[in-house]
Length: 164
Image (cartoon, rainbow, N blue to C red; front, side, top):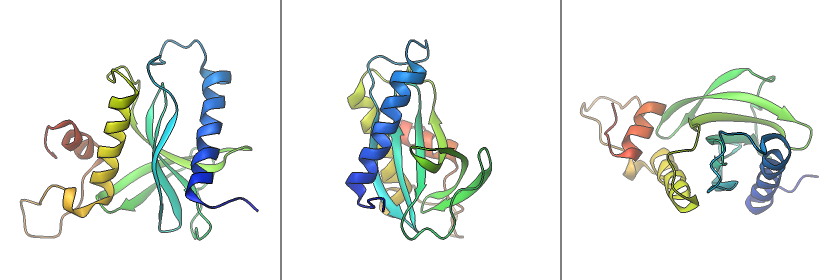
């Protein structure tokens, strides 16, 4: 049985992407050499493990089926929208024999904009705060129910440009 504790799942994801970094990405010019693989804020959200994955080549939201998952990812390359507290985000399915089925939502690629690991991790944490903490989300200009932040709106808000 696969361990379903957050620390164990985080370790499994980080080991997998560290191996991808060493074996598949080594030497590619898109890598930011100041960054390392790190999974930030893994949490159980409606049966899925969701966090922000920082790598030297990309920053993604990542979702994996948890022990109570009722809707696992579809086949490789299929897309689905996941409703998170801040809005609806499109994820793309992937699978690997070591990691298993998972889905990603691209946030940044390449990672040139980040001066160091600390800056990338701070961005990842700010994104998680906006995604999951209702108090941190921008107030709606209209009292009608808020439709949520788009991926672009999420990134603009985190970067200080407002949610357009």
